[in-house]
Length: 248
Image (cartoon, rainbow, N blue to C red):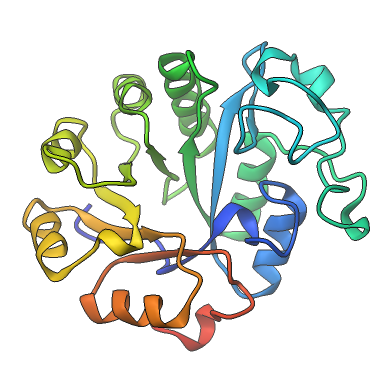
């Protein structure tokens, strides 16, 4: 991707910590703060519906119990995914990938979909999420960016929809990180912001890849990344960083 089509500032899980993560309420709040790109986590229900949730288990962010991926969407759709956050969001449902896509497409927003498989379903999740992403954005000029820590999920996504842009998520830069990203046909490296230095940025750029960071919640960290010339900042602090007043 010679022309990078994505905004510099990305709202983590929709609105960071100001709304229940990975819900449409979070997307709406992030948009109200001026964000035009969102990051979310996508996994599969037991009957193959891609829905947004970070954890494998339901307890932290919903009224349910157990492993989310072991339930059909008809059960997941009945859960309260907002009350854990605050009474303001009580009754907010889980979001499907389709719902998030329709919101973004209707408003010309961009989306970073982290493929977040239930353990053991890496290949299936990569395949199904990529297939739905291609279907939902088939008429869009700018597709979503698919990312994952799971190499198997990215391999499967690449085999299913090779034209969708992909990014490798890293929490450490272990030996062979760049070679892995090359093999997967990635257009970006998305890593813990502390891992970027002048040397690692230069190495990624020399390989033709963009450089994005998570999760940047302090101004000093953002300023360091801007000085390094990185391409994207994923943040929870949508109240601190205003995209309208900062460089794209």
